[in-house]
Length: 131
Image (cartoon, rainbow, N blue to C red; front, side, top):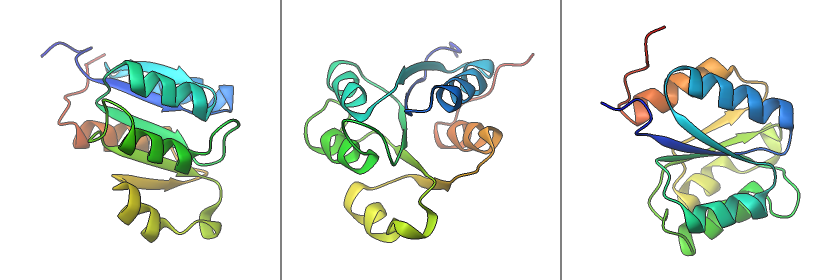
């Protein structure tokens, strides 16, 4: 299997968190595209095919929920698994968001990037690169 055969979009407005997730995912062999706001992520999802989208909930220009809506209605990635990451814990209705946007998982911050990588590998049936 080509180690770069699985492409992940990371939508996260905190550059440190975005780069940490990207580094962790790339380290095991995923190809990663980062978008630092929801609108940029939505445009990327309209232009390019992804195997997984990982999005923050609270971002400028377009929230994570709005990004989910845009992906599900107006992109070539309508069926892509979406993982939502949120610091809003009790403030968001995860059950409703799962039903409406068919989320693969919700991670509440703080979370371990390793947990996200493990979930992505499992979900995408991806064997991590050895190293």
